[in-house]
Length: 76
Image (tube, rainbow, N blue to C red):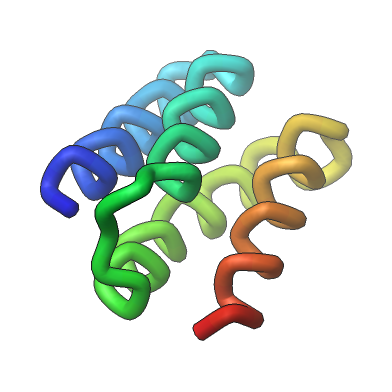
Protein backbone atom coordinates (compact mmCIF):
# COMPACT_ATOMS: atom_id res chain seq x y z
CA UNK A 1 0.00 0.00 0.00
CA UNK A 2 2.78 2.41 0.78
CA UNK A 3 4.20 1.89 -2.69
CA UNK A 4 0.85 2.77 -4.28
CA UNK A 5 0.59 5.90 -2.13
CA UNK A 6 4.15 6.87 -3.07
CA UNK A 7 3.28 6.48 -6.76
CA UNK A 8 0.30 8.79 -6.34
CA UNK A 9 2.58 11.34 -4.66
CA UNK A 10 5.04 11.06 -7.57
CA UNK A 11 2.10 11.62 -9.91
CA UNK A 12 1.08 14.79 -8.07
CA UNK A 13 4.66 16.10 -8.22
CA UNK A 14 4.94 15.32 -11.94
CA UNK A 15 1.61 17.03 -12.66
CA UNK A 16 2.61 20.14 -10.76
CA UNK A 17 5.88 20.23 -12.69
CA UNK A 18 4.01 20.08 -15.99
CA UNK A 19 4.65 16.43 -16.88
CA UNK A 20 1.17 15.09 -17.56
CA UNK A 21 2.41 11.84 -19.10
CA UNK A 22 4.44 10.89 -16.03
CA UNK A 23 1.68 12.02 -13.68
CA UNK A 24 -0.84 9.73 -15.31
CA UNK A 25 1.69 6.91 -15.57
CA UNK A 26 2.34 7.02 -11.82
CA UNK A 27 -1.35 7.37 -11.03
CA UNK A 28 -2.42 4.40 -13.13
CA UNK A 29 0.38 2.25 -11.72
CA UNK A 30 -0.84 3.11 -8.22
CA UNK A 31 -4.43 2.23 -9.05
CA UNK A 32 -3.30 -1.02 -10.70
CA UNK A 33 -1.28 -2.24 -7.73
CA UNK A 34 -2.08 -5.77 -6.58
CA UNK A 35 -1.77 -5.08 -2.87
CA UNK A 36 -3.72 -2.05 -1.79
CA UNK A 37 -6.05 -0.78 0.86
CA UNK A 38 -8.80 0.51 -1.36
CA UNK A 39 -10.26 3.18 0.96
CA UNK A 40 -6.83 4.61 1.71
CA UNK A 41 -5.74 4.51 -1.92
CA UNK A 42 -8.90 6.27 -3.06
CA UNK A 43 -8.42 8.98 -0.45
CA UNK A 44 -4.82 9.63 -1.50
CA UNK A 45 -5.67 9.41 -5.20
CA UNK A 46 -8.11 12.29 -4.88
CA UNK A 47 -5.09 14.61 -4.61
CA UNK A 48 -3.91 13.58 -8.06
CA UNK A 49 -7.46 13.75 -9.39
CA UNK A 50 -7.77 17.36 -8.23
CA UNK A 51 -4.44 18.41 -9.73
CA UNK A 52 -5.20 16.76 -13.07
CA UNK A 53 -8.68 18.29 -13.20
CA UNK A 54 -7.34 21.74 -12.37
CA UNK A 55 -4.29 21.76 -14.64
CA UNK A 56 -5.27 19.44 -17.49
CA UNK A 57 -9.08 19.28 -17.59
CA UNK A 58 -9.47 18.57 -21.31
CA UNK A 59 -6.59 16.18 -21.90
CA UNK A 60 -7.24 12.56 -22.93
CA UNK A 61 -4.66 11.37 -20.40
CA UNK A 62 -6.63 13.02 -17.60
CA UNK A 63 -9.78 11.30 -18.83
CA UNK A 64 -7.98 7.94 -18.87
CA UNK A 65 -6.82 8.36 -15.27
CA UNK A 66 -10.23 9.56 -14.10
CA UNK A 67 -11.89 6.59 -15.79
CA UNK A 68 -9.60 4.20 -13.88
CA UNK A 69 -10.20 6.07 -10.65
CA UNK A 70 -13.98 5.99 -11.06
CA UNK A 71 -14.02 2.28 -11.94
CA UNK A 72 -11.97 1.50 -8.86
CA UNK A 73 -14.15 3.69 -6.68
CA UNK A 74 -17.26 1.86 -7.90
CA UNK A 75 -15.71 -1.41 -6.68
CA UNK A 76 -15.42 0.05 -3.18
